[in-house]
Image (tube, each protein chain N blue to C red):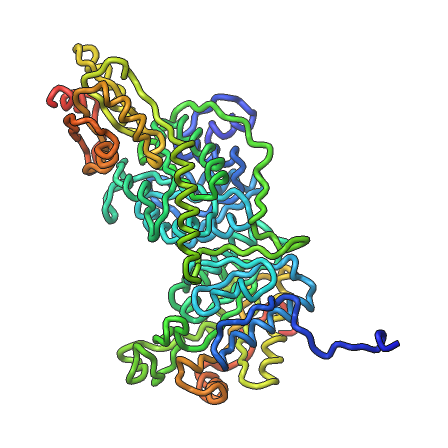
Length: 357
Length: 254
């Protein structure tokens, strides 16, 4: 039991937590009362923390026999209308994709936290951003999207996990919080939000058909034309999400020659590199998508209008750069710097790249 | 006076909708659905029951049962049931699963739900074949049985042996009640109903995990008439899968 936890109990506003603990506490304060998970590095502190905290809040903690089972337990909890979540890291998230597709198809809310580690395969246990495509393109089978939130520090993983439950319920859709091994294990001060007093009532939930007609939850539509109608309805929901929920931040973008585009941990390192560049008289700015899906395309396009060159920095071989290229209509150089293995770039490294392009 | 003496001899259970099922003539699902619906009516739990439909022919169970039902991914009903029951411990939660669902793709889920002693009722319909996908070998297909993926008959050397689920689960400490029944005769249908009812009662009494395996038919994929299919259940299936109570921790006399 960490010091941060004891302090949280005394309702102290600022506590020191790891990224795993912050996200878990954010979930509990957002009214999450069901967690099922399976151990995998670098997110093991998450289920450990939940195993202590959930019983204290009369919630449910289950260590499942597999990631597949964990996400399906979350499916079951979500069916009842309870706020439910799971967490894992890349190989485990691959296993959860079956369940995530069913959640999206059945229009069930759920929150899934991915502390991204290196891949493909077992890869490494060190920080990575290689699950960008998986998080933003749907991840599993079928024509669906998941909202993907990318925090860049421990405070933000707390805030975004808290927000994730609101978004999941509002749109009846799974929400992914895509962090990485660095945010998962790093300790930082966190300002806590007050616990939610009530969570939304869900008329569609299965609670027993007392005083109402029976409800059913399904993603199978065999009658001709029904699936198409269902998928068009979901697509319309995705349009609303794009319109209303896009989040991003810009830094030093008033006068720019070079625009850095980066998310999560990498964006935070880019922010340090900005100071180095500005000190040398290079007019550099940073655009940081917070929602990876919906990607802030229009906003990026507007900021990019002022730039002469763009440098996309990611801890992978170049995934978000595809969305940057789709967003930026202007004919300018879009360069890429990536660390696709087990390395985290330094500010100096990024500064060298800024000078190079 | 005539009003007072009027007595119902038979009526459709309230827990069944008026939908006509898609099931083939001679299929066991209709019998088993009706047994479940009757039990839920008799126990007066329709308004607090949540069912979990499998992937397979019975996926459309949510159209036929007149209470809350959810779909689940193939093999995952025990995990989904766990999530539901833990969130709503005073509701009655059951899964309805076929042999491919429970004994192949969902073996991890069923074993661990039993090991955790989840207070749920599992109805396991074993007809020895993948029905909806048109008759491939199932984990419970008998040796020698012809299917679309064992056209010359299942052999131990090439395809391995069928799995006896009740015997396997009876070894698990967390399981409370395990019984295998069949539906090839009226007495056996009555026995099946008694067994499933006990599974539901145990859940109401918080006694823990129950699984009732029902040996059932698939005349279409067995290439048999409905009556020959019923005969085959008793003559062939029950030899390899003996009926009976494999475990009953809920009954102090056992």
